[in-house]
Amino acid sequence: MNKALILVLLAASVLTGCSSITQNQTLKEIGNAPAMSPIGSGLQFSQAPQLASYPKQPLHAASGYSLWSDSKAALFKDARALNIGDILTVNIQINDKATFDNETDRTKKNNRDTGWKANAEILGWKPQADSSLSFDNTSESNGKGSISRAEKLTLLVAAVVTGILENGNLLISGSQEVRVNHEVRILNVAGIVRPQDVNSQNTISYEKIAEARISYGGRGRITEIQQPPVGQQVVDLFSPI
Image 1 (cartoon, rainbow, N blue to C red):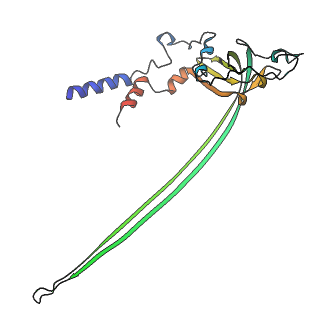
Image 2 (cartoon, rainbow, N blue to C red):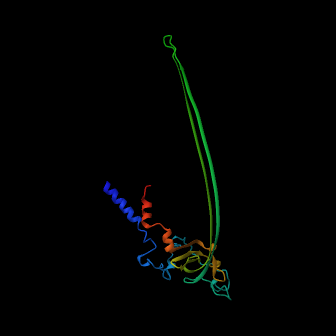
Image 3 (tube, one colour):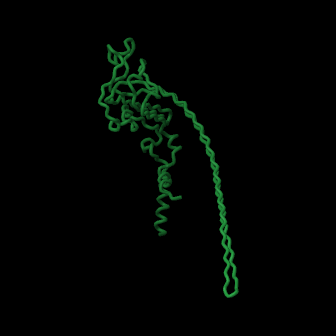
C-alpha cells in the first residue's frame, strides 16, 4: 500500500512539473514565436455548422428581383457573394453588458407538543401517569449573488462561402490570425446568412448571422503562462479533494 501511494505521489509531482511544454506549445517553438496556421485552415473551423444537422427544405432560393438574379442586383457596384468560394466581410461590433443581482431569504419554523395522561384503579390503588413531548425545529437560509459582465469587441473579418443550403442560404466560415511579438491573436467566425442580408458593399453585420459562432482568443507565450500546466490539470481532474 505504501509503495502504491509513493508511486501515485511521484507521478503527480512529475505531471505537475510538466510546465515547460503545454497544450499549445511544441518543442520546435521553445525560444521562438508560435507558428501561424496555414492559409485555408480557417475553412475547417471546428465550430462551423454541419449540413447534416440542418433540416431538408427542397425549395429554390426566392429572388427579390424580376429581371435579374440576385448576383446581378447591384448594377453599378460589385456583385455580392452568392457562390461557394466567394468572399464577404463580416462586421463584428459586440457591446454587451449584463448585471444580475439575486437575493433569497428563507425561514421555516415547526413547533409540536404531544402529551398524554392515564388514570387507573387497582384494588383501591390509583396509579397515575402523565407525560408530555415537545418538538421544535427552525430552519433558516440566506443567499445573495450578483453578476456584472461587460464585453466589447469591434472587428472586421473576411469570410468565405463554404456551402449553399437547399433554400439558398449560405454557410460562411472565416479566420484571421495576427501575431504580435510571441503572441498570436485568433478570430474565427462561422454561421448561416441570407443572401438578401449581404449589402451592396458585400458586407454583413454579425447580428444577421444565424447559428453564429464567434471565437476570439490567442496562443503564444502569454497564453501558456496564464494556463496551468497539463500535469496540474490532470491532477485537478482526478483529485477527490
